[in-house]
Image (cartoon, rainbow, N blue to C red; front, side):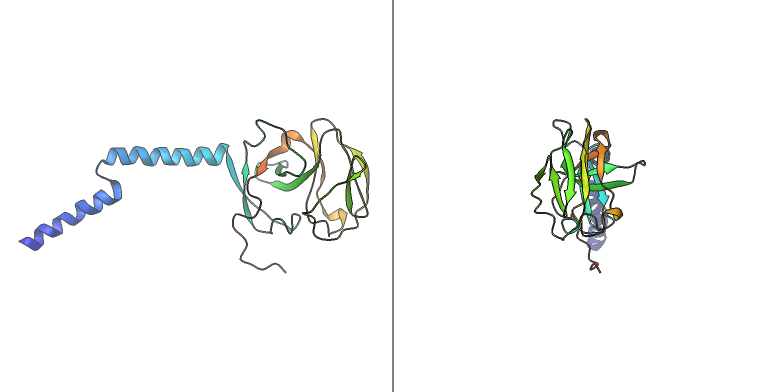
Length: 185
């Protein structure tokens, strides 16, 4: 008789651990948590996967990072910020670094970025480059974006002036959230 009494307690203990002593309150907590996660994902933090070598070595190919969608609600993008730039679709974006602001003149000579005729200090550019690009003036409400890996020929890169409204947000982390476990070739 004693053993039967102990066996009947197990379901109530399991129930208390899994759903709590007040199931309605537990359900409300779960719903609030789900709503908070969905809201955070939809309106604040956007996870993105990096595909391609254009931001090497700062950001690895196939790494995952978060975009802070609220970063530019209170101030404008700054030179040096790494941002997500929306292309024509909702799900395809480029991760690029801002090197030119509205009204700036940006060009490349002997692989070095020149902003308003001055050499731009870019410690994040680690690979040598031989890019040549005549200076161009950045229109109002646009910024000049480019990847950190400039070792590839200039014709293989997506870069240049982009409209401010296409910037989704600032990359939240300065390194990969999850580093790729696959070694790069």
